[in-house]
Length: 484
Ligand code: BG6
Image (tube, rainbow, N blue to C red; front, side, top):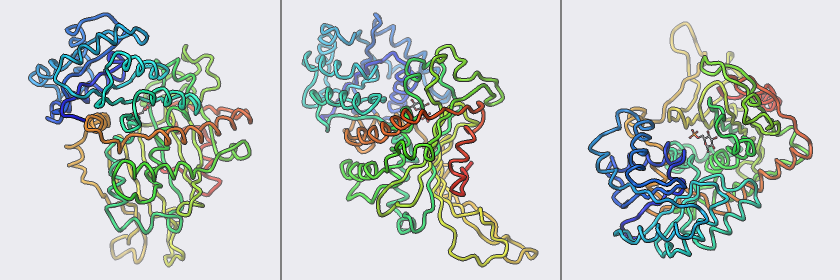
């Protein structure tokens, strides 16, 4: 892509744009990293002028940026980049007005960020093309959810593909923009230490947890039809799993990394009606207390009264059928209204083949714990001698911290900053390729079909706990417990 790029956000007045995209762009500008970016053109259905939009953007930035990051001087520069154009998805004349605005500037490239209803993505792309707004240096970013199942995902991909090539299409999974997910690549492939032990000879299980405190009030029409499996596992958890499990890539080029992730997704053993009962747990929060505050149950929210078939929690046991991982369970879980917000990956190693120590606590194993949030860190759980004269050779657990926490706090950024920067520079490494998303949907669709066939019940859990008891049982039958 040429030097200067105009970023056009469809859904520019929406929630994602206000909470994530504009704050991320402000931060890139503040750090002097937005030199490729010329104008930011927000589009929406409301009738308003650019000044009114700038005022709304300012209010939202003040609301969503950390207080210390706000700076009036930076704002006065940043506001000049902001523009607003009214665009209704089906109105060709609106796209022509947008196209003529884009022609006025000095940019040679355009980055279209689609953050509207995904059902509109195909139409928006076609209208842009018809208005002459798509050229050799145009790219498109697609927000999730990319469909509701494999068929709808394929349809969106097919429609977008009529206008933008795969090389020009950037499918977002914001978990790939999180620092620790990228650090996993550095840890795995920058060190000789871990690679020889990254397989079923040494690893006994892997856990991936994405726990959230928040509920889903306010997301009615979307969440009622989606549920935790589609909303979180299809994308975020499977993307993290594929980075944990992939083979060393030929290079760090996007295509090499995506080839290896694809192989993992293709090796996932299908969960079918025959084993869905032992492999999955669906949950739904009932009333309870989160962070000391009483909260309603999911079905008590007005918008979800009829959503009896929507899960807000899912736990499952996945198997990767390849030489490296055969026999190693990958336990995944995610849910809303859990006891606290945290995301982590736990690589649990096997116990030594024979124990020499009288007091060897069987439950203590070596673990590599990778925290994604709220804080980002990596620690290795080992055993060593309890110090002192009194204890001869007694073992105790010790955590070795493998990250520089101070630097991490100073250099922290939001995932959307990373991803917007990469999209502006045309780097697809942290974006999902079409075959990845579709393969992930194929695996998820099989689970949903199995749930339907078995009428798999949804178990209640009280808000503020870590999910239904059945999730504890899912892993306890294998002699394990969730890392908490
Ligand atoms: C989104 C889901 O993709 O990710 C939300 O739609 C979820 O339901 C969010 O809350 C979690 O993102 P993060 O970065 O806060 O863990």
